[in-house]
Image 1 (cartoon, rainbow, N blue to C red):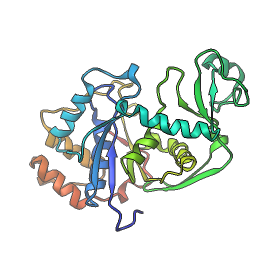
Image 2 (image 1 turned 135 degrees about the vertical axis):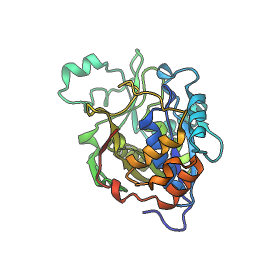
Image 3 (image 1 turned 90 degrees about the vertical axis):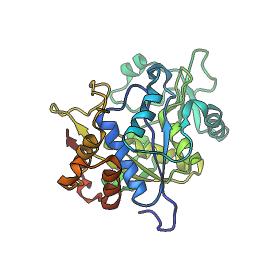
Amino acid sequence: MSCPDKKIIGRFAPSPTGPLHLGSLYTALASFLHARSQYGKWLLRIDDLDTPRNVQGAADNILSTLEAFGLHWDDSVVYQSHCLDRYQVYLDELAQNQLVYPCSCSRKTLASIQTTDVYSGLCRNKVNPPDSPYALRVKTDARVIGFDDGLQGFIARNIAEHYGDFILKRKDGIIAYQFAVVIDDYLQQVNQVVRGFDLLMETPKQMYLQQLLGLPCPDYMHVPIIVDQQGYKLSKQTRALAVDLTTPNQVIFELLGLLQQNPPVELQRGSINELLSWAITHWNIEPLKKRQQMNA
């Protein structure tokens, strides 16, 4: 739980790879309500580092969609692509402490020598950097990272055993999500992260990096994901449709139901402001505890 005298700062950090679908708006709403119910700030960050996947105009579309649904953010929007110098400062710090190393292994090479996704450490003890393009991996150890998730309970993982030396900067020069999100949250003073259950097992890696860099760890809460009739997570990969902007109040009412908030029937015809005001006042995470998915 957060300290009662600590100003809550939450965030929503979508990638501009297409329009917001119901699953991403669901997560945004949960994050918004959790922050606002505690009189906290809610920030918006556009995670646009993975440039090959970015879709032109998607970032602006995300902003206008959130505004259409009354999810107004505090402060200026942060774009990861504008923060490259900041990431390099912290990469340099890890390099100076000999906590990262270059890796030129290809996926094909790793597939031929590994039986799991955990990196074998093939490049870890090489003296000279390779002549070919290389990624930067962080050196992991056998420490166990444990934390109390606000919804899913206690989670603990042995970093070396479960993840191995994971990538912080890709061969194409793109900063990896795991590293960028740690720096972003620290620089924005985010102390409460509400996101989807599908990212739960990424959290120990991020907490490991926070420990290496001496950064504070936010509180984490992973909400259940929305799945379709076939049991697949709603996502751009499964061609989830963009949210319907013609009846935003009906969409919010539906999402409050999926969040197990049980809004009164009379609110079904209410305005966006009425729905969100009710939801902030009555926000209750208890029905979401230990839930991993919700059916659309």
